[in-house]
Image (cartoon, rainbow, N blue to C red):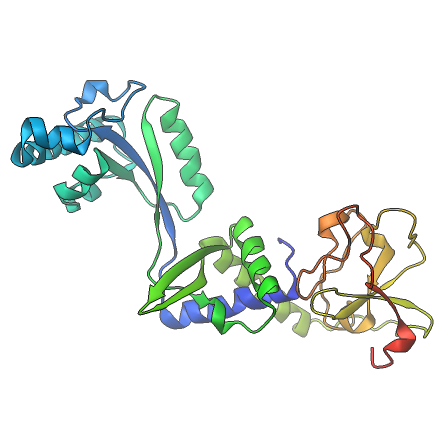
Length: 310
């Protein structure tokens, strides 16, 4: 399972709640094969598939009625070609439901593949078609609105934006924007991968409740211990171990979750030996503990005696 911070998980789960409550569809991607007006099917395998005519050229030399007829003819020829060469991959209805004016604005006609719920699969098909000399692009079908808008999330703005960026890079959400009357809004929409991730998190939480964690001897943090304080949310979730060395770059095994967040507590995902640099982040908000050189930032190390309630 992809490791997320506690805050990122909360954002994902809140989006999931809104998504299921509203019965919203998931984003999908299609690969589009494009061809210029009046291009014949036998030319579909050529490298150059973008029309050399501008809108003004078409109007000046041919007139609007001729242009529209040419567009409709090109659409029909493209469909016939694709029906023969790609019978199982093309959704032909899309070239029929779009009016000629749309294609006139674009400068080319196109037909769409079937839906993909994962963008990388659409990109793989696009590369396959491009290798055959076809001009292609990815078309994103996003549901209107958002599963979760930014102003519905409580937290530091920087933390929220970083959570959006991380979740989008992992393919779990899509960052969406819109306008309502005079107000601009930002938010996220869950992808199929994001939906599955939340279900995995829910299963994991359910298992941890049903299977009591083995109770070992409770760890006691001495008053002279050093703790890690997040530079962004100010949360304290780790203490340093005997492997900590301020003279070398920080690594995951130098830090250990406090008992209340470990296996016998909230059971958060902890840093591990191989974590370093940008992976050394706060489990709650994702704030980075280290500077660009890989050493702990100033003010991150604090004394346990100054935080008696930890």
